[in-house]
Image 1: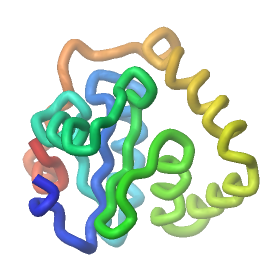
Image 2: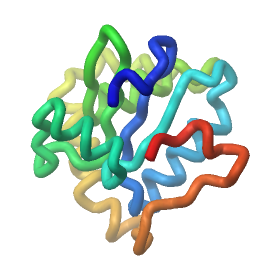
Image 3: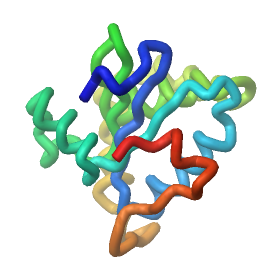
Length: 139
């Protein structure tokens, strides 16, 4: 499964039924000028295979995971900041938040993640990419 991901690409796993997560993925797609990212919902076959391969406890991480060849996995705020770093100026300035200790960043992240359905809503099913975006999504 990991062999399907080209070495130069990074895979973002996201909650496919979360409106906030889907909006964030649309934002990344719009600003990914270097075509660096691939995407898969956590609920997808690819997402489930990666979760099982790395024995990820989805009760502790259920909203964003960043996989990159040679660097493995990043979770929560670290994943979000590393994604932002790759989106070019001025979005890459979000990397300044790396000066905030991880436990504080993840506490804020967890508050938002815990309330994301209540605050932003959810879909009944994962989003279906448009035909021109289909190549960016793994099943």
